[in-house]
Length: 93
Image (cartoon, rainbow, N blue to C red):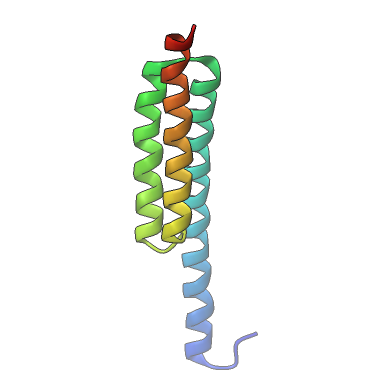
């Protein structure tokens, strides 16, 4: 329970920011799951589209401080590696 007017304002502000951060993280995870599903199904064209959306979402999340920059870079890298493995698969057969 906040004791001062400014503390009450900080409670409201932090709740608003937490909700925005939760929404951003959820969106990033949803886009990543969509990409992983496309890769799992072997849909190269859909995977190329969804990796762009997921990578952009990671960049925006890192820029706004929702995710650490290195976390976003690592996740993007792993998505790109998955796409590269999918692209190399038909050539190996």
